[in-house]
Image (cartoon, rainbow, N blue to C red; front, side, top):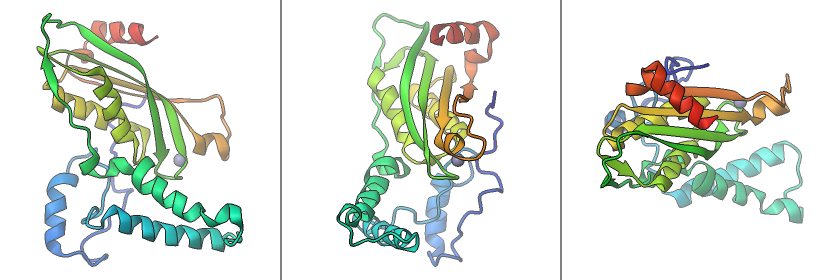
Length: 238
Ligand SMILES: [Zn+2]
């Protein structure tokens, strides 16, 4: 099993810097506070959200049309004509909308009247993401658990948090840790477990074609580092 030791922002990802793409130094500093420095943040360039969505869609549309053209497709064909625009909208507004912090779900907690302080498990949350190395889908299920610290979160919010972090180019290990970190932060507890089992289309469609294989990533912290607590969680999601 892959665990949280994975260095998601390792040197393998060359980050565009302020000098190479023309952004002013001040943008570097501003974004730096939010996106750079912790190991599990998605690698974003400085000024990543300076352009409004409309402008991003225009540019993606134009570049995608170019890609299709280079591949030899006839863009005057009725079936293909609208594709660049559709892809642009899908990238910016849908499948990669979780890149933009403005789209982060607002999470409110409420008091746990029953003082339930046992493990709460939400199983089978849908995961739909994209591999950042091939831009092909990753799909599977997430199972999440936490031990309430007097306050609880609406169950649908767990789904929203998973969806937000999934809607970006991802690696499964980073997705797992990002969800766990967000849960720790909103719930005010370290007692969090995230388990994701997913299939990667880039593996299924290419090369080795292990169509029956899936990838499991986990992140345990707080009481879930305890063997018995972890066993109870794994039993619950079986
Ligand atoms: Zn891939």
